[in-house]
Length: 174
Image (cartoon, rainbow, N blue to C red; front, side, top):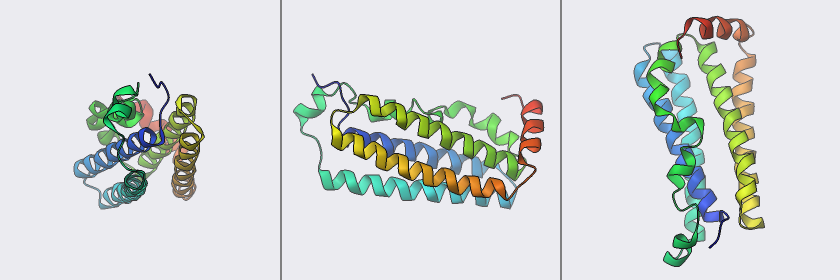
């Protein structure tokens, strides 16, 4: 039995992670009344949608695994693997979205979540089946680093973000 993730497995996990991000940010945008915050959620959704399409395209080019390959994989449920990330915790959306009363807090959350995803993918490297899968995780990590840099630029445009977020965290019952 193969106990390592193949390149196809990695791509399926990445697609599932991006889908969960899309659902999360779209759900959050529906709960927000501030047009600026909604727009920010839509931009984060668009970023995730682009990533999802990239991973989908790469997976399609590689082809689908054979039935024998998929039965041998110890990680045959990419949705479960994606659920190990913060975006798998859907139950917290209602409380979190209510705390997003300011741009700074939403940006702080987005930065934290992107950082958590980078940690998740770094850990995934320990479960790859071969160098191709390892390189694919590196490629995904490169995109997550770009996403982190994008969010970080937005954060740096808001110099009072740490004070605002500290206050919001103390008052929110997350």
